[in-house]
Length: 356
Image 1 (cartoon, helix red, strand yellow):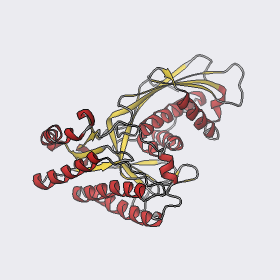
Image 2 (cartoon, rainbow, N blue to C red):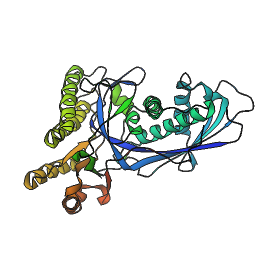
Image 3 (cartoon, rainbow, N blue to C red):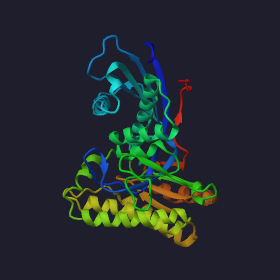
Image 4 (spheres, helix red, strand yellow):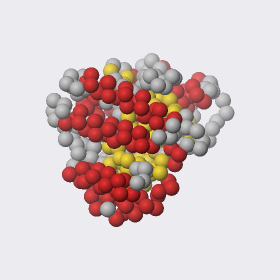
């Protein structure tokens, strides 16, 4: 066991953008269907965890949470509730005073999943802490698998952000080692064109969405198209995994766009009739399709549960795409705002690795 001095652990974890969407969940934060995402490179959350042993151990969690150097009560309550739920997996937590310091390098409500990167960074810190307090070094695969499992409890999509590249989560028939409990990396050949994917996030609106993702997932329980969605996503997963293995970017684009529009169709047809798309979202989609038709380039769009659009393309077309974004698409963005990102290699440990 470590002594009573304060220990600091830091991780940077990336966000991700799902090509096949996780939508609908079961008890234990388990997904109704499998999903597949691209891990981003620049868009990330940095979290530092400081901890020291309590003089008098007790049964409750003792923690504080700071976001961009300010104590955030809303986040504090959420993280405290999460840690309490994780005690069966991390029983040592009640023996320590915990302080979390977190910040994002991208704006809130920018069409980038901050919950994915923040919960992944937090989970990685917790597994590193477990190694220190139990004096046990986990094998790399076991380390990230546990981090993915912990991250899932905070945010389903966060389970995918502990890995780089293309990542799947949920039991998927075409992926043998897949699981509902944790995500796994989808291996790409070193010469695969998909290693050169880039993502431009077009900010149509920076307003915070008026409903929570949890509400959206819960709406699937009684959704009239629930069974149809299950059949659709299973077919899409089968097609897209084969397309990735075969470098078939046409099918990749077709499935990704179908998934994005299906997500919003499910929201529109839910009991509350949730409308998140904005007029400029639709204008951007139309412009992308017209540009693809006229240029013959491989590019496509996807959208999460919000109005902002991800334009996915390949490195070799970067100059042409940047001209297209600057000359056309930026006019539909709020204050001309967009974010330039690409496929990333995964999280990074920020504190020196201490020998165990």
